[in-house]
Every structure is written in structure tokens, then in C-alpha cells.
Amino acid sequence: MAPNSENVRALSRGLKILRFLNKTGAARAAEIATELDLPRPTVYRLLHTLEEEGYVLYSGSDSRVRLSPLAASLGDNAPMRSRLCQTAVPILAKFTDTHAWPLDLSTYEDAHMVIQETTHSRSPLSVDPGMVGFSLPILRSSAGRAYLSVCSAREREMIIELLRAEAAVEDLPFLQSDWLDKNLTAYFKQGYATRGPRSFRPKTSSLAVPVLADDRAIGCLSIIWVTKAMTMDQAIARYAIALQETSAEIAAGFSHLNAAALS
Image (cartoon, rainbow, N blue to C red; front, side, top):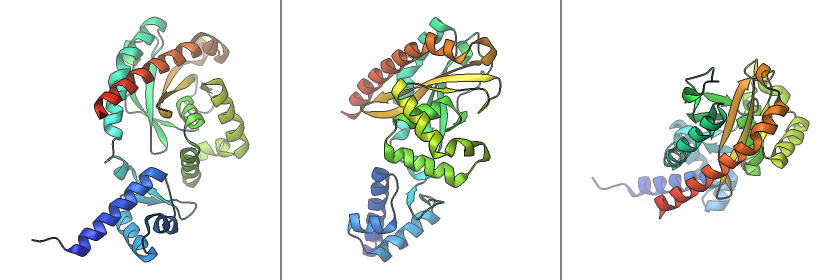
């Protein structure tokens, strides 16, 4: 059966919209129409179809639309995560063999940091052996805070907007503009983020650094410990630099592997 020309054109336009949203992060229908030189009624109709099929989501606080996790899963995130994990595994193991503490590698996924690799199984100090796949709240975890401090301003705005729309009770104290401005600036300047026992996972604390490759955040490294075993100041003095060096080693290895895969 020959393809209907109208259906083919609609598909082409729908794909253009998805590519545009993938590039910009979020946009209003009018912005999409202007940038892609499409009639507004056509854009509204296509967005409605894409929403029904689960490929786009409308913001809960304004009229902007963004890609859904389903659409994002069709992109190159999975191969990127695979290359990141392939690079990181031996480097994470080396850190834990040297310092004993378990180390987690997490990446951003739909307003959470998801643990992709961990050394809990080889650490004598671990109390959480099954952490791969565990989701960490962005604002209440050191990994999420580290990621927010270094991601692009547009991505940060989109993440915070999404968290405000979801309005989880536990997040509300950390969604205040004063808290965000003060702490994210501090985390960026010092190159690491912290989390005490009162904001998430009682009786534990954590310290995290971002993993930066090709001028963008691709993940975070974090260690977690029972708070009574070590103060935050002690953890920073002992492990902040080691975490940053481990992050840099992973970033260099990932960039090399990624370039080879894309060449």
C-alpha cells in the first residue's frame, strides 16, 4: 500500500517537533511553530497526538511541553550510559579498594538520580548491598545537588520547574529560591555537594561530585556513610579530592570511549 502523503508529512513534522524539544529541553507551542515555520493549528494538533501517544508532557506550571521519559528512551541515552558504566566500573572498584567506603555512580533520569553502578558489594563498610537502580531525590541527595550545581541553566530551570509542579512535601523546604541560590552556588564553587542525615535517609550522610565530560554533566559520584562514623568535615577533608580525581579519570575514559564509538 502506498503511503498517504498527508500521513508522511504529519510524521515528518512530528519528528521535527521531537528533535526540537530534544535540543531545547522545553518550549511553548507558539515557539515551536515560529522556530519550525509551521502553522500553529498544526503544531497544536501534532502535540496533542504526541501527548496521547506518551511522547511529550505538558508542564504542570505553564504551557511549555517537553519530551517524556518514553521519548527520551529512544535517544542515545542508553548507549551513553552503557559507555559511562563500562568506563567507570574498574575505576570505582579501585576507589573502594583504596578507601573502603562504597561508591555510587548515578545519572539523571526524569527528576531523579538513578544509581547505575556501585561498589557496595565489595565494601566492608556498606549497609546497602542492592543499590543499582535505586532512585535518589534530586534536592535531598548529594548526587542530585551536585548535578543541579553544574548542569546547564536551562536544564536546571526545567528540573526545578518539574519538582515544583510535583510539589513533594519533603522537597518544599529545598525549593525556596534562597536555598537554591545559596547552596547551588556554593556547591558549584567548591566542586562537591553534601547531604546530612535530616534531609534523606536518616542516620546517614553523603558527599558527591559531578562527572563532567565534553563540557556537560554526565553523572555523579557519591559516597554514603553512617553519620556517627564520620563528621561531614572529616569526610570532605579525607575524600573530596579523591572523589574529584576519580571523577576526572572516569570523564577522561568516557570521552575517549565515546569519541571512538561515534567516529
